[in-house]
Image 1: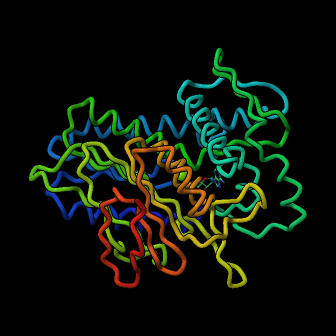
Image 2: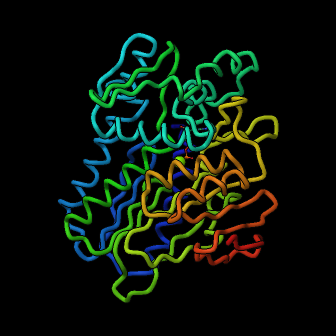
Length: 343
Ligand code: AMP
Ligand code: MG
């Protein structure tokens, strides 16, 4: 990841976490750079070092299995064997790939874990550039989740054609956040905030029983205060945002970000700046926020309806905001307008 982007992500993470910390006295949080982002874990009251260690080891383990940047990872091994042979993988990797395939099908293929060749071509994180139309057209046929072959008997994964490549960037952080929260919970932690670079899980309740507040980042600003916050009263909740401002570069006055349309090979260009999903399973919320962002508002809402526990906040390019009825979103930035609650 480029320094600039890393810096942006750190700032974004800090904004959200400081916002949360202002709500409750706490032991110090622990920050670590994992999964291509800065993860900030805050365990309240009983933040023992051992639990922090266990949580970060688990996140690191997931990175070692699922990162495309680690040569020995399951995902890199699957990609290296594309068109050649099936690769047996860890049960965790298999589970996340299966769920990614579920979301690919549910979203009519706009969410596609075989997006890898496009991610490499644009290289938004490291050395971004605008590829030629010819380059994009060459790789588009490789992006097709239907060409992932899963063998549930052996946990094996086969990509049918050489050059295909999985990328779990849109879902793996959510899985890691769920796993991190599970460790906190089984260790008796009664209140925690687990922020994996924007995939946030809130666990337990505050001592004074007041709702948690999770800041929603302004899509226009990098170093700004949140535009508002969601109030969380559930004992386990996740807040995940996909937006155009998380990883991007600018060229010829245009903004190119990291979420791609598998049909035309370009960063998605619709009327949305960001989509936040609030739910109880972070892996699903992660996949959903990306899928809904690509689908756009109307089709995204139709997908969201399949998940009764999920709520969403849509921030549009004209600074209007729409939220679903159960969102509990409080707007603080007067530059935006909440137009409607969707019931
Ligand atoms: P997120 O930040 O969760 O919305 O995920 C964005 C990341 O998912 C990108 O950095 C890519 O690694 C990957 N990605 C980009 N476009 C897609 C897509 N259409 N479907 C699935 N994954 C994608
Ligand atoms: Mg996602």
